[in-house]
Amino acid sequence: MSSRHREFGERRRAMTKGSETQATIARWGEETFGPVAHPAALARRARLELDELIEALERGDAGEAAREAADVLILLNRLGATLGFDLADAVDAKMKANRARKWVSAGDGTGRHSD
Image (cartoon, rainbow, N blue to C red; front, side, top):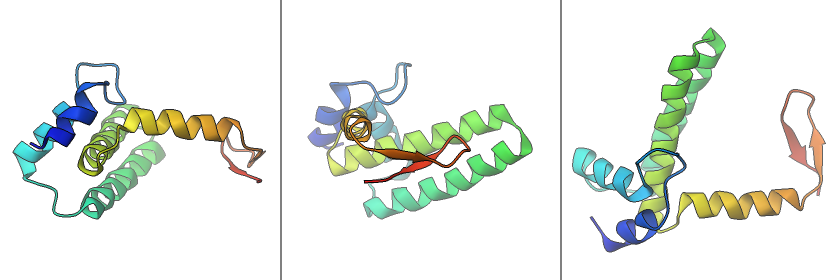
């Protein structure tokens, strides 16, 4: 495992409250699946897991939805480690930017920015 994985993962927990960190997730991924050939491979796999999450939600299966949401977060944490950014820091920075924007509600609990 690269020192970049350790550096960005150990200093802060992954986007979970458990014992896993971005570094432990990245280490497990590399040990289990080998090195990431291209970061887009992780994003493509996350898209498949997101489709499975949507299917679980449409069935009303909260337990399966939780497992699929975890799969997406695992892949995003691996992506952060691979590209050298801390996912939690990226979320914090994005939320700061989001709070400064103007938003239009779609009426379904989602929306879009208007600026």
